[in-house]
Amino acid sequence: MRFLGLKPLLPRGLYGRAALILIVPVVAIQLVVSVVFIQRHFEGVTRQMTGNILIEVGYLLDEVNGAPTLAAAQAQAAALTGPLEMQVLLPAPPAAGDRRTWIDLSGREMIRTLRTGMAPVTGVDLLAQPDAVNVTIATDWGPMRVTFDRKRVSASNPHQLLVLMLFTSFLMTLIAYQFLRNQLRPITRLAAAAEAFGKGRSVPYRPRGALEVRAAGLSFLEMRARIERQIEQRTLMLSGVSHDLRTPLTRLKLGLAMLEGVDDVADLQRDVEDMERLLDGFLAFARGDAMEAAEPVDPFDLVARIVENAQRAGQPVRLTRGQGDGVATLRPQAVTRAVENLIGNAVRYGSRVEVQVTQTERQLRITVEDNGPGIPAERRDEAVRPFIRLDAARDPNRGGGVGLGLSIAADVARSHGGQLRLGESDSLGGLRADLVLAR
Image 1 (cartoon, rainbow, N blue to C red):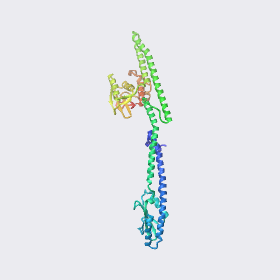
Image 2: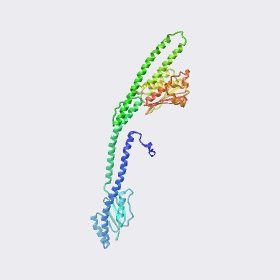
Image 3: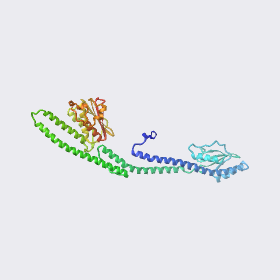
Image 4: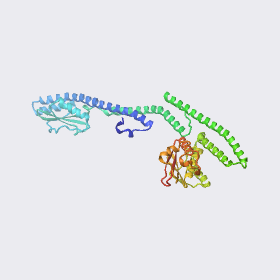
């Protein structure tokens, strides 16, 4: 069910949906109660009070019709004016029909009751005097107009009950919303802690709220602790592996350096250097700077230093500032490694590289573009997989890597709650890599 096309208009936040769940039943109950109240109060009470007036008007009509002359009828009507609290005009102008406002619900019921209970009634006027009722009745001596106070046939102060009902409902809605807010606050805190952990930040969190919410919070804390222990153990293990492997590599490099006059020494040295480069790339990918703490950083200054180092190394890199400025919470070493890999990949296959930093309220985007051959759209997902080298990267003349540059950049983006997007550069025609990070 699509709620008859109202789904885009519904609130998306937890507080908004909870408030909607709370307010809709209250409003529905208010409408039902209001309809029942109007039907019972404005119709039933008005009908009963009008019936009492009918008895008095009927008595007045009998006395007027029983008088022998018009003068006697006028005298009898004048005598009853005080006791009945009515004003009588005899004879009176003919009635022009019933007159009332369209919103006067009690007036409609009153006119219906008067005409049903007394046939001689020829017209009821509720507009001539705001607080009075003018009833024209046919008598033996001509039309007679009877005027009496409107309060005698209408419920007094009916709006007070409606105002009290609305005020009470509004007050109870506020109280219920406060209780509901106390129950929803732990859920929002849990969501904020999970979102921060997804961006590589560990914020303090203490389970609160209902039993189910506490259970979910404790499960999240246990999961976060297990992941952190696993990352720490992996980093320590890789550090030990790095130390154990670098020692024999160093001995091999030293032994090869001492050999003179032996054929293929240069080839063996290149093999050792390739092994060391492969080891460094693997450790950089597996470690991923996971233990680095996030801190507020000016992204433009960070990327500017990276580009400056690349320019000092003779690489054709140019930096431009996009929209937005300010600081973002990042792991600077991880972001530095990711941007360096993107620039190195662009320089390897292109002769011109442009870097741009753009910031919005919710995200940071670092764009690296080149004029190289680019990557076909159908192979871009394959290019970011670990240890995957495309055909162009296998060209030894280009100094291909180990297939981890884009993978490390993608891993850094995911650890910051973002992603690495590959596309085609509109300005340079080569590859466009967008490192999108959540601020």
